[in-house]
Image (cartoon, rainbow, N blue to C red; front, top):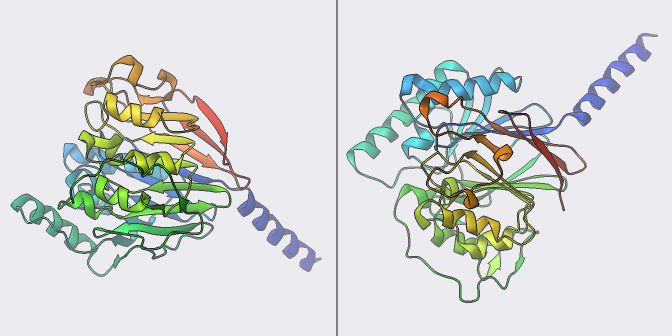
Length: 338
C-alpha cells in the first residue's frame, strides 16, 4: 500500500511539472528593462533591473512580479549591459529578494564618471556570485535551453541549427561600429520545444547585421523582445535581422516617451507574417496609426499620476501554444509557435 501511495505521489509530481507553463513577464520599469522568466520547473531568470531611484520604484515592481509568479528568490539575474535603465535597480532589488547568481558580459567599456560609478555599484553587489558569458555559452535553466548569442561586442561565429541563408541582406543599410555599452549587450535565444524567444537587450545595428548577414545565425523565432526599447533613435532594429527572424509576436518594452517611434513601429509592422504587437506603454511620440490596438498596450497614459505599472505576460505550454495577457485589462491572445 505504501508503495502505491509513493508511486501516486511521484506520478502527481511528474504530471504537475508537465502541466506547468513557461511564463515570461515584461515588468513596467518606465522604459527601462526588466524581463522575468519562470521555467516549467519553477526556476527563474530575470533580465535587467530597470532604473535606480524613484523610491526604488522599479526594484519594488520587480519584487512584486516575482511574488505574483510564486517566487521566493531570483535564481539567475542576467544584466545585458551597464546602463542605468538596465542595471540601476540591482542594489535595491538585492535587498528585497535573494539573488543566487549574476550573469553578465564582463568589464564595462565606458569610462565617464557616471558610468564608472554605476558599474562600481554593481560590482559591489555581485562580488562572489558573478559569471561572465560569451556567445555560444549556455545559461542553465531547468526545462528550457538558453544559448548566448551576443556578449562583450561579439556575436555567434557559427549559426545555430535553426540558422539559414537569407535574402534580406541584399542592399541592407550598414552602420559604423558602436563603442558604447549598448553594443556589449548580452543577448540570448531561449527555446522550449517548438517555442523560441529572443532577447538581445540594446544590441546595436552593427551587431544585429553580424547576426543576420550573410547568414541568419539564429533562425526564425516565435517571440521577440524589440531591441533597444523599440529600436531607439535608429541605433537598433536592422531590418535584415528583424525580417529574417520572422517573429510571430513582438513585445516592445518602451516608455511613454522613450524608445519607440513611428519608424520603429513600421519596422515591426512590415515583418513577414507578424501576428501581434504588444507595447508596455502607448508611444506618446507616435500617432494613432503607429501604436498597436489599445487592448494590447499595458499602460496607455503617459501621466505619472495614472501609471499603475501594469505588466505583460506570456504563458507557453509544452505543445507550443503561447498566450499573451495584458495585466491592465486581462485581454489576451493565443498563438501557436510555427
